Length: 411
Image (cartoon, rainbow, N blue to C red; front, side, top):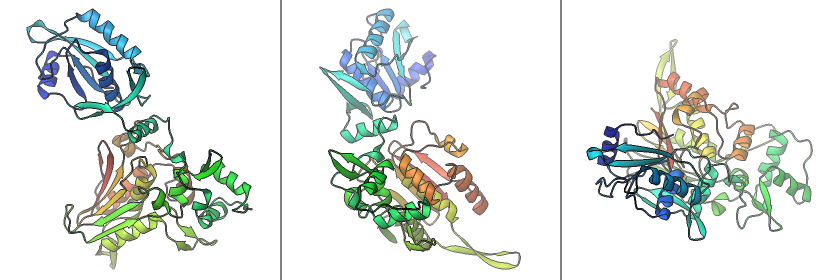
């Protein structure tokens, strides 16, 4: 929850800082619709505060209608003009000169996103962008549903696709070699279609069978055609910063999983293998004596790189279109940037401690079947952190922003 403001000094500091994505100033005579709109935008972002009785320029005008009536009005608006309704935290603080200011606080990680405010006879989802609140786009609203568990984006049908757009060879490899199924239905049969739908790799919509987003990402014959955000953009920069003078720039598209023969020999690589190959080609190794023998050590431990790449692919927010996972190789580090913030239930510290989550559950399960994902779902704690500590005594760096999550491994 957002911490309440208990002291006058906290109030003065907040006013002096000015409005931002989590703080809004409002006169006490604000219209109910505007007040509800701002609350919905804060709830859909990271929570925050409305300072009631403060002008846009930071001048304190106070609660003109009085403390009791202001509280009654706030609770009525939050109950009648928000969907779902909420009971916000309400406090009153005396500012300089004895003027009373009301502080309305809504929590971070609100569980029932998206929150909507009433506009006329309609309910409209609102998002907070800097100091403004506006209507959400369809994609933004979908992401909010996904954050609250109300929408599993990976189960959506891919428009224009069919079950024929999934790679039969890879599917048969998965069913026979990975799952150990004794018999396989004919790929043109109704049993095959039912099998794909039961595993949520395909779905029925309007009497037609379409590949799901997860099915297309895992096994799609031409995933990039249907889902441009499906792959990895891999780049190698000279030096320590991003630059136009790239040493290498590669767009890695295709099914996430590899194709193997019955005895497990690699036949065709998937996105994961191609990403690791890019890292190998664009990083080096150093030689050292160990027990009197010359041993070459790569710049980065491959188990850590593999885990970070797979995590980015499995846990990214695929509802964010127009951007791939970004794999950047610098002289001193590797960065893997995944579109979308962490789910509400997960923090960076939670990841370090082994907290488990799955934004894309079907994909997570199948990647685990292949062995791409650590079995207990604690790859950061059990793979990445120990591998980096053993390799060079460093820890991975984690950076969370509003629309992306970045992991850095130091050389």
